[in-house]
Image (cartoon, rainbow over all chains, first blue to last red; front, side):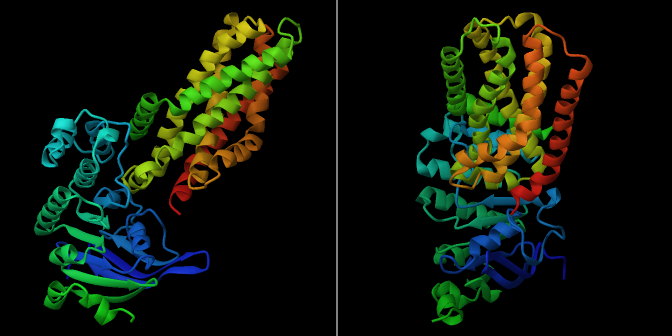
Length: 232
Length: 222
């Protein structure tokens, strides 16, 4: 078996005395897509923040591409789409993408290409504060995919997206998976997640209660995971 | 030179909104004006407290600029995206420090002639040595203020916490900058025993720049 793209081993995280994550272990390889499920406050976002290098684990080890998530080489290969859109309201769309292109060492022409792909080229020079919600979300998607990341970390990516942005994101994620990229996404949108996922994990009160391949039952009945593996 | 791109981004953002620039500049001018009513601007004693007065104004106005340094990244969770990018914490911190430094220095250079007019102080013959002191003092304030801005960015009372942390730590640099500025505005040159204040200011900048660059990664990733 090849080296996993992402390996989480016995990770614990505490907020004060409260255990946000307890002994979480799993791994993913190239081309795999994990739907990380769990109720609000279960620990999904905490797990994703540790994977993105935004937070450290109290115990245990996280490896991305065989490295610590805080290594620049690992971070260069991550695409992050969190709760916020991660773009600056006072800057224009092209200025936003150009900044992130510079930070990731990507050519500025790629920023223009992504504005075309996300159908924002006509507003390239308009400040983001004038954008509709859907346009802002598409710009966030462009920002996350700009540097062609090998690992996509998505925190509830379909929440509050308009239909155009959902279609765009689903298309990009399908292409990424087909190209051998690894995807991990937390979500409450079970149907969209199950269509993309190769693996499913369920977190409850910081504990990983299920991790395994997505089965046909899960695809037909998205609530199956909660009913079968979750606490009543 | 990624930090220059971070600095350029911050400066562009600030010049679009002018949030901290307007607040800081108007605050500095109002303080200078009010103090000119409190003291007799034509008195000989003015030169004696000129350095202290100027640097107190810079320190108060600077807190308004420095508070925005990392807080600017909070809307839309931009700070998370920056921390997750391949840019090191030190580069990010340096970029933000340079942006705040440029903004604060601009405020100071606007305030200097206003101060000269209000307090009847002739500063032009000593402009270049004064600029040197401004550069050193402002860098010390900026580097420490940006570090505390990163430390307090997620606190609801950050506008209060930043000055509470910054001013006590700034005392050695402020004392040096005040003393050296007073010497220059009194028409004298810096030399002899006064050089110890210059050494203290340079030492402060070197020590806190090194410490801040070493500590900032730990502060940003919790």
